[in-house]
Amino acid sequence: MKNSLRYPHLLKCSLLNDLPDDQKVGFIDQCALRFYEAATPVLVQGETTSGLLLVAHGTIELAYHSQDGHKTIIHLAGPCEVVGEVEAIADKPCAATCTALPNTALLFCATPLIFEQLKSPVFVRNLAGIFYDRLVRDNKLKSVDQFYTVDQKICSYLSQLSSKKKPLITQSQAYLANVVGCSRQTINRTLGVLRDDNIIALRKGAIEVLDRAALERRIQHGTAPDSGRIN
Image 1 (cartoon, one colour):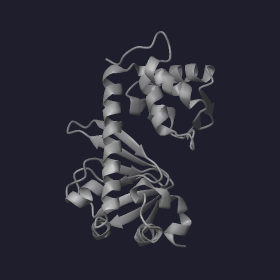
Image 2: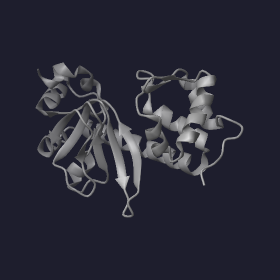
Image 3: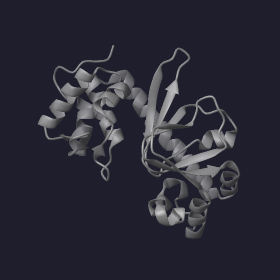
């Protein structure tokens, strides 16, 4: 089955906004489908890449590894998001390690196909839009890390890991603690407060966001009177 038929939602991804339908289909169908049943590094920090990856299904974890061995999770990329395009176009080593989490399907677009698409001003504009969205996201996260309480940080990451169309977060609470940079006990306490206030529900192996508007308010104002800041 062709990629465009197997994953029709990709035709609406931001990378292909406003392109002719035949160009969208042609691009998607020329990409190579890759499926990962187990967690697998697909781009490695410091190594080069020969193309970009478009998430068809599942999740890619983006992580930066410092020289002293610390791992910082930067982002979790979901369906319709791309990774590796900057490095592929610039012919530079990967700035972070990208790991396909279990049961993730990716479309690989080789660099020559990327440059073919770059002949279209609309495609260039779409790439610039993706870069802009990342700048906004990174600026927001920097502000959260510097000025927000632990509870606000947890709420911020819960918002990032979910959406209106996908309210379930399947990452574990231990994983969330690692992303936020706090203890498992702190995660449990804050999730308990959010659950009691009917903002989230704790399902078996998942967290469901019930009230996104309330979650966003907690990001701005905190979740509990005894919230503390990260030292």
